[in-house]
Image: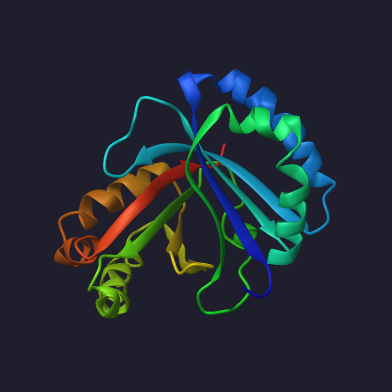
Length: 208
């Protein structure tokens, strides 16, 4: 993994305690702002889960680091801190991954997602066993249809160090996302793509 990377933390808040989660998160945000290698940080509130939402609130946290080495150095130093342990005690992590762009080209999320009401989808998924060679073609077929929908902004593919595939998809509004989802769910391209992948985490979140 070379160049800037994104740390993605999909956080289900234990017991629905958003106030406690926010209080535990505050010192972490302050620490990140002072940490070498941190370029940008976002926290978005999820409103849609695939296949079905659970009863607890979920937040999608993203941090862009200048390099995986900076992330690893900071992570080693921070994980033992009591305030970090306290925060992790407030959440169930649906996903905690570090990713780089699949094509190796730079990606600045703020160039696309930068105003209230916009939606970011984040999914962590892998091809089912035996379907690895079919992934790219099925993805191209499905995302070709995604890109035709009103409100679509972008989609970008990422990889983790161990080969998991992660996608980010941007939409102009929650209403346009939901309308597009309704249309896409009726298309064979969506069924073909979702039929060959296993999704370990999938959230759509809104910029507040």
